[in-house]
Image 1 (tube, rainbow, N blue to C red):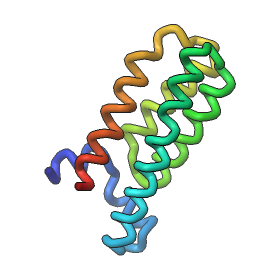
Image 2 (image 1 turned 30 degrees about the horizontal axis):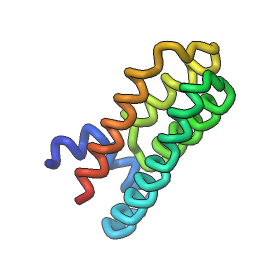
Image 3 (image 1 turned 60 degrees about the vertical axis):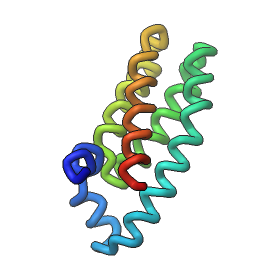
Length: 112
């Protein structure tokens, strides 16, 4: 499981944020996953409604939170969604939303 963990999280970024406190890291990631999962449905709804502004704002929130905890792959996917929304290109975001959900689910599974 350690290999998957390294792919999902930049552990150095997380350690810098937590001061190396592994308990705090686990708590921080748990809160991050819960918050990010809560953002997925509104993001999917914004894309389905072709609401570029809401899509961009939600994706930006996910991107920032992800970068803060070192979830670099999730941050990258959210950045792709944010950029597409910024350009008004919401038609082909389904693969990105699927990837985002898979990445978050994988991170959540790694925390169990």
